[in-house]
Amino acid sequence: MSRKKSFLKKKMQTTYPLRVQAMRAAKKSPRLFVTFPMALAAAIGLEQGDEVQWELLDRRELHLVILKNAPISAKSKAQK
Image 1 (cartoon, helix red, strand yellow):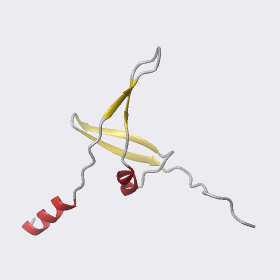
Image 2: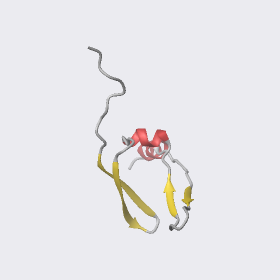
Image 3: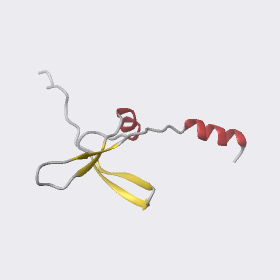
């Protein structure tokens, strides 16, 4: 790869640091939650209600796979 392409590839990479949060409900095991910044969700086409799953590649890398996009719903009723 040429130096210019290598530089452009590094410049285009964007990171989204976030924290894993624990939610504890009475008499239930703690659950871990990860929130997605809206900019990241928009960049990958992730919408509320989408079905996703994680693919574990190794101990330090996960891939998020969007299985099924949520059905599109109208934001307002059509006018007659």
